[in-house]
Image 1 (cartoon, rainbow, N blue to C red):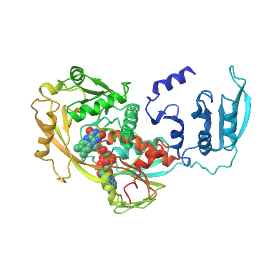
Image 2: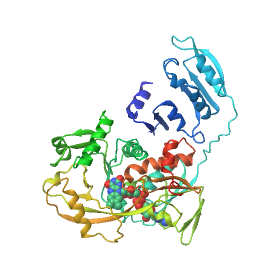
Image 3: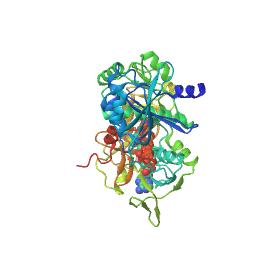
Image 4: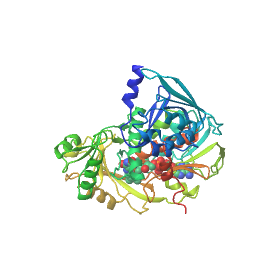
Length: 480
Ligand SMILES: Cc1cc2nc3c(=O)[nH]c(=O)nc-3n(C[C@H](O)[C@H](O)[C@H](O)COP(=O)(O)OP(=O)(O)OC[C@H]3O[C@@H](n4cnc5c(N)ncnc54)[C@H](O)[C@@H]3O)c2cc1C
């Protein structure tokens, strides 16, 4: 028992409102914990997707903690039950037995444990229409960027058959071919769907990359500099809202410089679990280490179950679109915007040669797996199909907020982000096709949790998101 509780305690999620998933890969168990007030939490679970096998109701004495035993709680427990659901609680109070009986549970008073004379056991008494489709599926994933590859790997790990289609088989174009992408969240102290998603996707992605045990993920920590008034106010609000230092902590200018390995001009916030990854190598590793079938061709057309290439067609149980801004060629989607970005590679010289971790201010600078640094990035509506000097100069201008050292440019690259007006990705189902796109400027954090969600939908497992978040990410949300 002690060995089980040790594993549980080591992986136990930090206290932050919402659903969190922990995967115990070796034991083949996943644990979903919902932190929050009981009624909003139960209300946020979709009875069509979530159904309890066993419910242990543990909420202090009913007279001391009325919310936990209210008629509404029993109503939602009933909605989330099926004909195999069992219920138990240490309490044998009348409030409990009545609440259960009124909501279609068959109640049984049993012998209690410890110093308790009685406890309550119950089972749901109605016939359930809920069915779990646990069949292994044939799934097509279109696009082998971070979104497609993290999804393909999740599906393979769950035992599905996966074929991934990619038109740029050399992985030589776009952000997935950059030498490094920085993994950190854009947090705000306000309780908005965007801030909620940013925090949860960050927490999920950092444990996801850790669990991969790959050399292409570098958990170095990331430093965010307090470089202007707006940032200063945002950081102060964040520090007031979250004081436990589990996600970030305030660091002085000297502490920041020590962590970064170079002298920085401001204090900042330090995210200890953040870091940077080499997207191209990680993608190759995800594809190589598994039984994913790889088809290096452009998909020309899709239906709910068919993928058409120039001169071939394939049939599947499900199709998942992970083709970023190019998805519009295959299905009509509202709300996608295409934003160009350029990064600049720098020589490791003088002070910045000692850079140990990514630093973000107006732009960012990060180590890479080669003997060069990366700085970026621009954000524009341009469609220039070559790297420009103008954009390199913009990146170097932004870098001045981090270091005033002279730098030597070694090269540059560009790519396109798919973004949306509310900055949240489009993740979910549309016209019976799974959509996982528009990860904007935060694909490294948002791809793993989105992959988990799509995998849950395909698997018929309880989803990693509650109803509110599912609505906020819906691919239909920009359609009138
Ligand atoms: C300049 C710049 C800097 C960035 N920096 C960061 C950063 O530091 N940290 C961070 O988290 N994010 C960063 N991003 C964002 C991040 O790169 C993206 O969010 C992420 O790469 C999106 O992954 P994706 O898989 O959705 O899209 P992509 O990586 O674009 O992959 C989509 C894939 O689909 C393929 N495809 C499209 N259509 C078809 C078709 N019909 N058939 C077959 N294949 C098809 C494409 O060839 C492509 O490989 C940056 C982006 C840019 C442009």
